[in-house]
Image 1 (cartoon, one colour):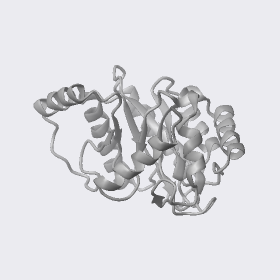
Image 2 (image 1 turned 135 degrees about the horizontal axis):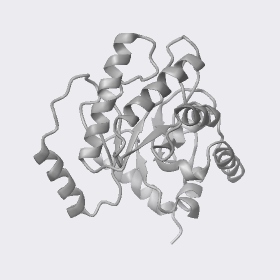
Image 3 (image 1 turned 60 degrees about the vertical axis):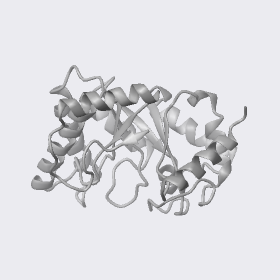
Length: 253
């Protein structure tokens, strides 16, 4: 499963109490959950050129990193952020310096930070595998960072995963530019947005522009048999159950 460790729409948050952390870890064990991921706040932008926003973002990011470690969560997923109109290289520099400092100050942490693929376009970072590879290379913290691949985002960014040929071509590009060793998790979402639209709008599995074939290929891909995959499809509990069932139905027994 994937959780927020604090309110994702506010800068301020109450401290995490030790009894909360202990209770969470006990619940994970009791429920037999194999993997838990944390997702970063929607406000955080570690690439921001605005000093105030950047300071708030670093504080929120480090708080969530600390919470993830305290909760025993192995993966903490963040969006690389936006350069807000400066340049990709300036945003990259601001982001990577922030990541290096925060991670270097926590040398013994076990939680791994995962950079999420984005829909790209405009001022956003992480919209291509080349961009993510550069972020990982410039941060230069091996063993501390990996990647979470979002199916809706890569499709909107221009990677056509709708057919077996396109799916394999996309993963070959990822393997060449980043490497499967750094691919740690997936967000499994269909897309209401078209290929290469750079618009991030999720849809139910098989009901968007991607269609069922890409998800059939993914859930049956032996290379990712043990990778955690989380839904971020719209709707309530019943909608999540429908989407999960569709994915299960696509699996070959």
